[in-house]
Image 1 (tube, helix red, strand yellow):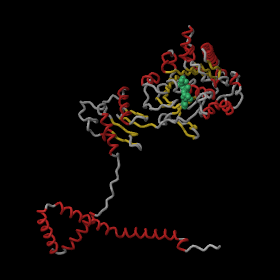
Image 2 (spheres, protein in one colour; image 1 turned 45 degrees about the vertical axis):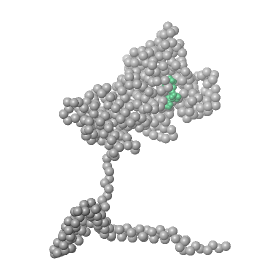
Image 3 (spheres, helix red, strand yellow; image 1 turned 135 degrees about the horizontal axis):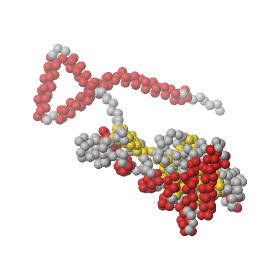
Image 4 (tube, protein in one colour; image 1 turned 90 degrees about the vertical axis):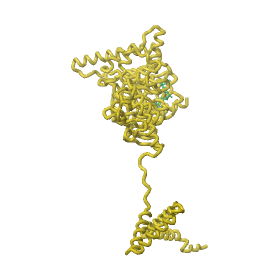
Length: 528
Ligand SMILES: Nc1ncnc2c1ncn2[C@@H]1O[C@H](COP(=O)(O)OP(=O)(O)OP(=O)(O)O)[C@@H](O)[C@H]1O
C-alpha cells in the first residue's frame, strides 16, 4: 500500500517551530533593548513608591498631618513656579532612572569566610613563635592583621591552603634546625595532616614558602633506564629537586620523571651507598634494582645476603654475577677475594699510569659488592669466634673509587650500630626507606628532609641524600623477587626481562627453566 505523505505542518514542522522560536527570541531581545530605559524608569518608579509607602508607614500618626501639609505646600510651589511641573517631572524621571538601575552583584574575589577563618587561625597559631614582648610593632600579635604576614596563598578544591608565603620577623632564629622544625610541625598540623608539605626557608628575605606536594607515583616498575655508564637510578623524586628527567613507563603510560641518579666510579664524590629502613620497607628491592642496573652496564656483581632468605636467588648463575653468598663462610671467602681484587686493580692501574699506558681491560669492568643485612652475619661470626665480614670491606671502601669498586650496604635501623666505622664514613650516598623517626633520619641522612612524612608510606618510599646535597623524596621502582609467589605477573616479567642470561647451571630446581627466554620463564614459574 502506498504511503500517504505526511501533512506539511507535520513533515517539516519541527524546523518551522524552531525558526519561529528563533524569530520570537530575536524580537524579544530587540524589544528589551529598545524598551530598556522605559523598563528601568518603571522599576525605579515602583521602588520610589515602595520607599514612599515604607516612609509613610514608619512615620508616627501624629506627624503624618504636618508631613502631608509639607508635601502639598511643595506641590503647590512647584505648580506655580515657571516650568515647575516640567522640571518636577524631569527630576522624578531622573530619580526613577537612577533608582531603577540594576547593578550587577559584585564579583567576590579573594578567600571566602571559611578560608579567611583558616588563615586567621594559622596566623594566631604562629603568634607565640614569631613574636617577642620587646618588639614595638610586632608583625605577629593576637588579633593582629594576618594580611601583612601572609603575602600570597592558594587554596585547593576543598578550601584547604595548598601554598602560602609567610613573612616572619628578622629576629626569628631561622638558622636553628629545632626552631624551624617547631614551625614546620605546627604548620603541618594546622594546614591539614595527610598531605606532604615542602618548606622553603628564605633566610635573606625572612620568608617561608610552604607548598603541598603531590604524592610520588608508585606504578613505576623495574625497566631499562636511559642512563650513562656509572649512573644508577635510585628512584624518582619531585621535579623541583632535580634538573633532569628520564622517560619511563608508569604502568602503561609513558612519562618523563625526575630521577635521583647516583654516580659511581673514579670521579664520584659519593662512591658507596648505605640504605637503611624498617623491615619490609623495600631495602632488598632497592639492592635488587641496583644489581640489575649494574649488570646492564656490564658490571660484575657480588651479593652477600645476611638474612639468608634467598631474596637474590634470581641472580644466581647469571652472566656478570660472581656469587650470591648467604652463609658466613662463603661471605668471608668472597669478601676476602673482593679485597684482594681491589688491591690488584689498584696496583694494575698504578703500573699502567707509571708506564704511560691506558688502564688495562681487566680492571675496567666495575665491581659491585652488595651487602644486605651484614649485621646478621656479624652476629653469627662473633658467636663462632670468626672475623666480622664487614672488616673485609675496609679496602674496597677506602680504595674502591680509584679501583672501580662500589660497595652498597643495606641494613635495618635496629642493627645500624652493628655497622663498623669505615662503613659509616665511606658510604656518603644515603637512602632511608619506610617510616623513620626524626632521630633515625638525622642519623642516616645527616639532616632532616625539608618535607613532612606521609601518613601512608608505600614500600620503596623514602629519602635520598648524596653527600652534603639536598634531601630528595624518593620512590624506588618496584623490583620484587620474581621467584616470590606474592609478586604480580607484570612485575615478575619486568624483573625477569632485565636479568642477564644464565651462565652456569643453578641448582636442579631452577635448572629446568634456565635456558628459556624471560617471558617463558615467567610462565614456567607461574605454573610451578
Ligand atoms: N618500590 C617498591 N614498589 C612496590 N613494592 C615494593 C617496593 N619495594 C618493596 N616492595 C614490596 O614490599 C615488600 C617488602 O620488600 P623488601 O623485601 O624489598 O623489603 P625489605 O626492606 O628488604 O624487608 P625485609 O628485610 O623484611 O625483606 C615486598 O613485597 C616488595 O615486593
